[in-house]
Length: 451
Image (cartoon, rainbow, N blue to C red; front, side, top):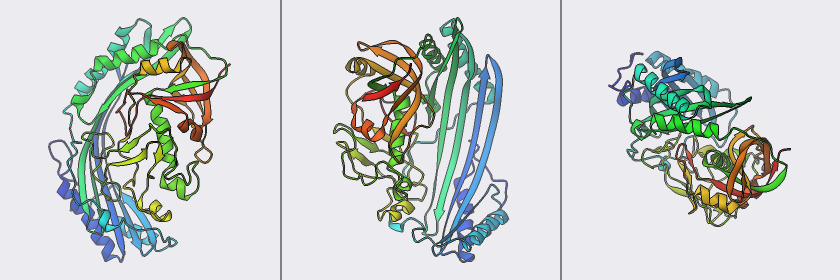
């Protein structure tokens, strides 16, 4: 087996050839005495360009690959990895994993996923759309994006650059239960960060688009223009007096709230007893209108996957129904620690969607009346053990249901357990540019600390 692997027209290796490498690793693990083994292989090819003030700042071609092997000797585990796919290197990687396993302590919860839970079929989720773009065209597109930002408003006098990125990849996973499957996927993006100046004040903001299919990306001109518009509206930002008011998280920041919720109901936090949502299964954690669904088979979804990191079949499921927590986020290991069954989430959630309400963003402003719109957050002020939440923020102050002025250098604080219960509404302005899909979220009664 040669190190130089043949590639297809999109630059990716043939799947069958990579499957042979994974199978070699599994066979070698068995030959060296492992009772169980698993191997994951990935190949990624990409192009990324950053243009700032019309000049190329960075231009990168990426070709990354890796093989990870995990072996089990009973309940002893060892793991090793390599970027060399030659037969000798694969055997040496397995040998290293086996050597490690012989010296590790036994853990009764270790092992492969149960065979009956592995994916029997791998559906085509329409994830692979190569972009036939070369460096010259990518540079042109980045310049077009940035130029649109400068043209949108004379106060946009600088930029932190426009980016064009295109990536395609192939993932293979196999284990000694006889599972050996893989799939291709692509991800492309355009983004721009604009800088505006008025007097001595400077502000920056951004906009971006990301998609599996380059044809689904927003036009470059629209991205640049929106980055400029978002930046200019931040001019004149000020601090506000400390108050307890409703807070409206726009989708880009609301995603972080749901992400913290996912962390709190994930197996690692639960079996370590490091979550503010311990023992919350089948209890009310949100208002009764909240529904949270996982949809791993959504076509072209950024979080879509036919199986998880252990080969377990992914499936649609409801995590929160009528505000009640119906399920955790578990791998095989964490599930065994909790006396439960894996939920197919080794590696994380897949297209987790907070079902939208009926109101638009503007209607949520009207409902809020007076309060804060949070458009960006800073810091890592979330304590998953206690639920305490305190983060630096910027956004807009709202009076009489309308945006009055931009605000900055403030802090929003509360306790996440109460914050989730105090959600008053979810908007219909869904943002699908990520693995967590949500609209704006209106939370009652948070502390906004400013002057």
